[in-house]
Length: 549
Image (cartoon, rainbow, N blue to C red; front, side, top):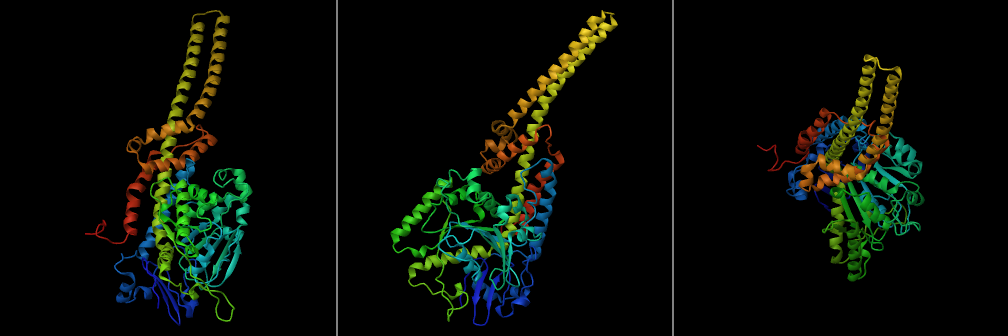
């Protein structure tokens, strides 16, 4: 009997059955009776614990879990997720009104939590998926074996669907991928598999990253639209970011042959996975292939060196150095190979690699629990983005309106002066020629001033929508955060600055709208009241929790 434990994950292998227990609300799978126990297939947000699983003896659970904190109750999970969905839906009308930074249907989640894998080709992503799921689902090989984004979901029987069917499914939650075009749609697929060890979440495999001959090293030209189309036919970094934003765990794989030297991988880490450190795990796989210790040191050092180029911090994140077990075919040579039939590795030198692998698997198994935290984080992130967008738009519009009213007063003054002179000439019985001249001068003067002011307002609008002026608006609307050097506020500003500039430039300040005071106050209420309340509901009981008496 073997136990792999990390945060309430227990794997038990017995002769007659295989049980996989995830006590934060995952699933209970009995190999001898899969049909009867697989009752929650694709039930949205429903990963409540089976009563039989929860009623395990306390002595057995204590031996596995130790003194770990209590998991969140399934009823509270549903309340938290429903409340997050309601709050997120409530801010979408304001986002549409002011053309905010939130994507359409960004308040809609996927049907199940999912783990997203990205990395170099032949870095072991597919093999890792097969290992975690307990059966061969993906084709593994040294050369690139797949050019599709593959969604692997649990189901009652094995079924494959193409990209249009997956993206067109209203319940799966991948419909927004249409925005990336038909090429991506036809390079996406769904695999539904039975008898896998991940009944509570999905896994998404991505095409292995490799530099093309036109990429000039990958990083320098990856931001060019032409290079994107030539390399993939669609916006690959954008698609990676779409998946990563919605994923509950993101795994970035490297391998000893290409320890961070693939420019596309580093570019994706810089541009597509920025701001996702809380759920990103960097994995150096296949570490058991090193024959000499100095080879491992050189590869690990090379990876750290390359990561330091794109991670603007002194401290690099943890790199999970691991390996997968050697897989053997079942006796007789037929059937699928299985990671559970692995040959035990010899020597104590690989024990750390095996332990790290178990740590990564444990993090993957926590995807359902992470869904709650990630959903609240996504709501908090969306509200902060929308609030900053609304405040800056309101400031820019006020400055624009001030200039506009100054010009309107000038035009009104010109008309009023001309009208007064005309009335005076009529009242004093001045010659008709003089009165006509006054009228003509008034009309020409007002028209000329209106034309001049119109051109001036065009220049003002262009000036107000420059990056420099928008930065000045940011400093005016967030003076305290700027003076305190608030890094979080600065990071939010960096994310919305360019989309905000393009939005104001395309729509025009005269046609753009700003949020009302009540709508902005509602955003503050969500940040200051609702989100902290949700955090307290989702967090396990502890001595410092606000719910403690």
